[in-house]
Length: 320
Image (cartoon, rainbow, N blue to C red):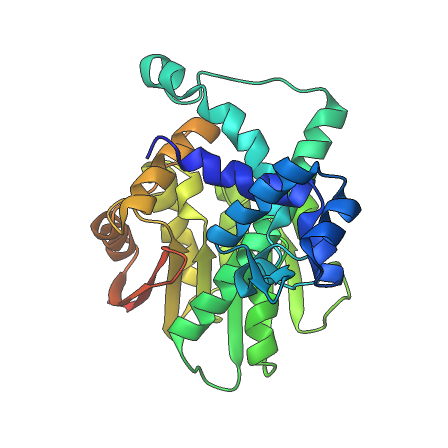
C-alpha cells in the first residue's frame, strides 16, 4: 500500500519522457527508442524493462510497441486518453499532504489562495480531467443501464461539459436532452447551437431559488434524470434539499439514476470519501443505504443497483 505511488510515477515518467508518444507514432527497437527520447542507454534499458513487466509496453522480436492498455488510455490519439487525468493528479497529490491537518482542524480548514492566472490553469486541468474520466465512465454507465425506449427526454443535473449526455445521445439519437450546470461550465464543450437535441440550462443548482425555477419550468418532463458524480460534492442536508426539488422534474413513470462512488461500494469508494475530505469544502461520499434513504425522502425507491468496472455504482430509482 505504501509504495503505490511508485507505479504512478512510472506511468507519469513514461509519458513525460516521450516513450508513449514515440511508440504511438511507430513501434521501434530499444536503440531507436533511446535515440528518439534522449534517455541514457543503461537507465533507459532498465526503465523500458520495467514498463514491459508492468504491462505498459510489449516486446516481440526485438520491437517495442504499446500494450492495448497504454494505447487505449495513454495514447494522445485514443478517444479514451487519460493524460489530462494524470496532469490533474499532480495537483491532487499536493493536496493529499494536508490530510493530517484537516483531520485535526476540520474539513475545509486548509484553504489555498491562487492568483487568477493560476486558478484558470488549475480549472482548465480540472475540466480536462473530468472530461477524460467521463469518456470512460459514461460508456460503462450506459452499457450497464441497458436499452431504453427509442425516444424520450433526459435531464442531466450537473452536466459538466456534457460528456455523459453526448455519449447517451450517440446511442439514442431520438432523445432530447437538458444540460443543467453553472454557465461557465456548460460552455466548455456543449456550446449553444452545437446540437439541437441538447438544451442548455445555466443555473446554480445549489441555489434554492434557481433550482426551483428550473423544477417549475420542466416539472414532470424527464423520462430519465441523471445525477452523475454530483451528490458527493455536497453535504447531506444539501443533497436532501436538491433531491426534493429535482425529483419534481421526473415524469410519472420516469427514472432517476445516481451514478457515483459510494463509501461501502468497495475500498475505492471509501478512499474517494477522503479525496473529497482533502479537496472540497464539505463534499463526501455516501453509503448505498444512505443514498437510498435520501431518494426515499424525495419519493423514489431504488429498483436496481449497478456495479461498474471503474468501481463506481449506479442506483436506478423509480417513483415509490
